[in-house]
Length: 308
Image (tube, rainbow, N blue to C red; front, side, top):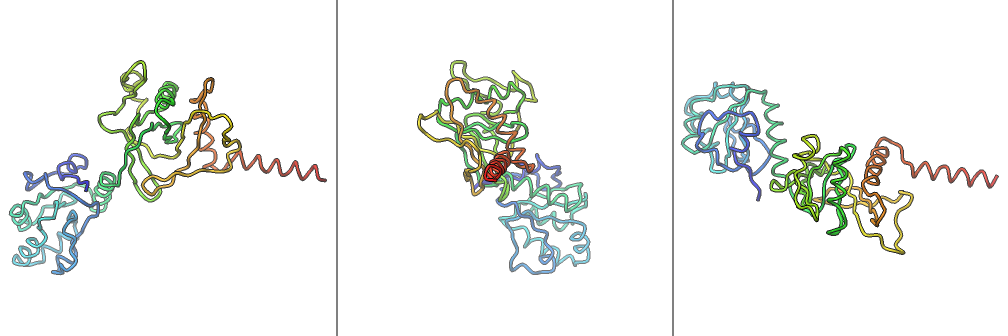
C-alpha cells in the first residue's frame, strides 16, 4: 500500500512543525481528514484514527471550555498508534495538554496559517494525488495544442521520433518511454514521467537527449491530464482504417475511459502533422463542432435534393 510521510506533506504544503518534529517519519495512508468534533464531546465509537486530525477555531474554542482532566483523557485517546499527525490551522496555539499527549505518543503537531477549510482542501488534494491508484505503461505523453496525447504503439514504430518532432514545433513533452498514470477522480486520468526519465527522450542512433537542455523550460511539462490516446501501428495492406471519424473507440485505464484513435504509419506519412490535426480536431469536437457530423448532414441533404 502506498503511503506518504508527514515529512513529505510538510515539504509540499505550507505547514510548520511546532511539536514532535522528530516524529515526521510517520506514514499517512489515507487522503481523508478528521475534524474531531464528536470526539471532543467524548464519543469515540467510530473515530477514524488513521486520518490526519485537523483542529480549527471551532475545535480550539470548544477545547478551552473542557476541564483539564477531560482534555488529557480525550487527547490521549486521539493520539493512537495509527494517527499520522495533528494540524492546527490559523496559526492557533495548540492546547498544552495536546502537546504533552502527542509527544508522549510520538505524534507530530503541525501549524498552518490558512483557514481551516483551505488547509483541508490543500492537504486532501495533495494526498489524493499521491495516494491515487497508479499504473505504468509503455508510451509517450505530450501536450499538443493543450490536449494531453498519450502515444502508444509497438517498439520501433516511431513514438519517440514523433514526440521529438512535436517538441521541435513548440509542443511540450511530459514523458517518454514509460508513463506513470494515476486516477485523479472518476473522470480524470493524469500522466507523468518516472523521476529517473524526467525530461529525457531516447532516439535510436543518437541515444538519450535532454529536452530541457536542448529546447528550454517551455518544452516540458511535469504532468498532464490524458485526453486522447493515439495508437501508432505499421500500415497493414488490406486493413480498413477509420476514414470519417464517426465511430469513436474507447480505452480504459484505472477505470477511466479515454477516446482512442489508431493512426497507420508508413514511409512518407508525416505523423507529427497528423497528430497536430488530431489534437485540433479533438478540441473542435469538445467545443461543439464535429466535422464528421457536418459531413453526414451534407450527404443526407445531397441525397434528399437528388431524390426531389
